[in-house]
Image (cartoon, rainbow, N blue to C red; front, side, top):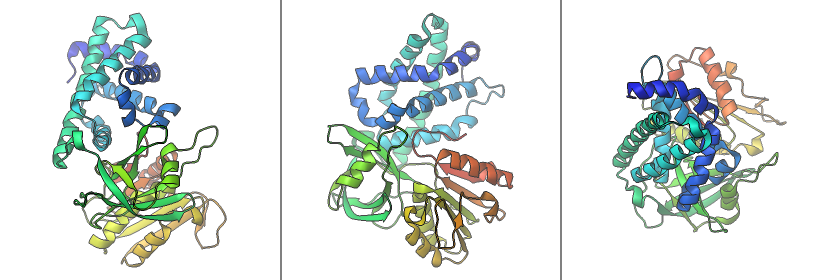
Length: 396
């Protein structure tokens, strides 16, 4: 709970901090990386370059402060979902508690650098309190995840051998992975992801998160990677292109543990799996798991893509669906096709919805915003609409 004195200061200064938040986080990352270049290995430099990481951090800190000083006085529940998402991301990368003082030092110094004389000792103390309330919440959440998975963050990364490489669609390839040391494959939940750390030719190590694209219990992990091609001046995806161009069978990849909070529920009600583009990957894992554990559960699979040729895992998902009792498959494609699928964008109004349905979404943020709003308009409660966000974005 934020102290009364600090709450008054934060409430008064929050508009100014929010207005300069991206500038503050930009200064923060610049100064922290200059002092601790080893931390570059933990951050997606593509997200740094286009500003998405700075915006995500700014939104998280300002959003947490806003909840702390909200009229309702509830400093826990509104932020829990965001905190859980951040904690899972941190665990997938091996973030440790002792790194939080480094972050706090550079973040609060960045506030002073950007806002200058406006940062009085009282203002500094208040925002110092905000940061450490956030840090302690995340440290505790991450500690629980490390304990639950029997993980040591100092020895988190493991070597995995590529047992199979398979071209799935235009610019999409799957890698089936087994532990290089012959140890057991860790258990995971359908919908989770792993971090893949790639050593690039220029000497940099870069991590990326990729959803696991088949269900647990198969004696392996599988990731399905879309080649990111730059457009409108944006560069190509460094890691995705490296995986496509240089990683073949029997080569080694370094992975973190499975993580992620958007996972299939263990109930028995109807399930709606909605995806676009490479967002099919966690949905494929959920469908695979449902087919092997709850084949009589009511399932609707809905997917949107550029064309059938770009639709990754389509044949596999169709084969799985063919063995289920009560399942609908609905596909939309932007480009011409002659397979009986729908043209244009996914239409939420034609999706079969039955009472008690739980929906899972994965795809670009604008797509998920639109579909989520449509499902709620059609009567599905917000608590029954779950979504996976690729990258540092947060869906309201």
